[in-house]
Length: 419
Image (cartoon, rainbow, N blue to C red; front, side, top):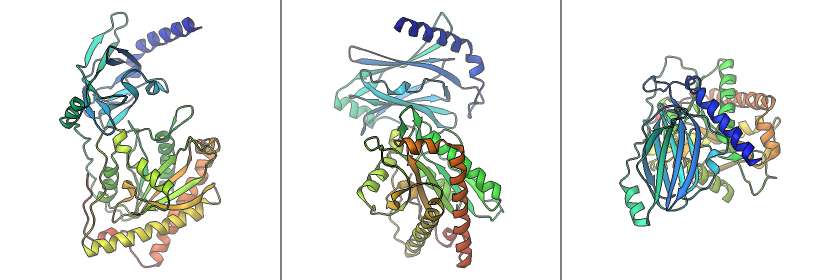
């Protein structure tokens, strides 16, 4: 049986290599217009203190590597690559590699983030053409290093972070603007369910459905912080909403607690310096490490606001955020199961805009079989997005009734958000 499996794998690889020209025609690289290379295989091999990660590609690409500390990682930056790898490819541990993630990091750029089992440096990355089929083998050597050498390499690395996207000019259309934020993305998969279901995919599909529902109603302008499977830093998500002068920010997530598969239900979070409970604090801490998971320095929260007008604006924004959370909770409760504490507070970086009402919705738990089934159900998604749209309608109707203009952030000077 093992020999049979190897023969099948070998035949599949030969077929994939033969089809590489067709596969490469899928997405087009954003920066150069050139079709991205396709990765159809990734193998690990260790010997004498060196672990090699070898990618099988449709054509040669240039790659650069560097290391980061706390936690120990090696990061490989590449031009855009269409990863056609088997599910679970990055979960195998071998030598210096504990696991690795891969995906689109920015328009035209892909990234591989390797979690290390011990300090290591990235050696000379080499490319070779395999004679039998013309496939290109990109080999990334990781070489064991002592802690001092690793720390020095990490300190001198140039991560070259993703370019911040320029906000489009504000249109004449004065309908309220809703910014829908699909959590995680690209090299940051978020939570992973048994069977290889990624949070980033679940929440992106839900976010797209919510956007479609809101656009169909015609009452709002709607934008997304990411419109495909790409990594977006936490602070940039906040910056996108503020630069666009959004009137409401809704971040979509799905949690996971592998040690407690019986836990299920949705929770709505708003921002606070003090968490409602220890569980909320831990969740915020995990979500705030999203940048680190993608191989960039963790985002810093916006600085303290000293100006009295800005402080009043922040207080009003938090009040509106909490009011929307309660409205949303009332609309969602009839169509989905809510957690034991459906509205909680914690210090989420992505919710720290001082002038845009913001909520983070944990739709359920990927670790719960019941929740996972619902999260993948088109009927359930249609019911929940419909109820969320009703909550948004009610939120803006209430604000109009109170005589308050939707964009409260226009009444105060903008406070900077740290990158």
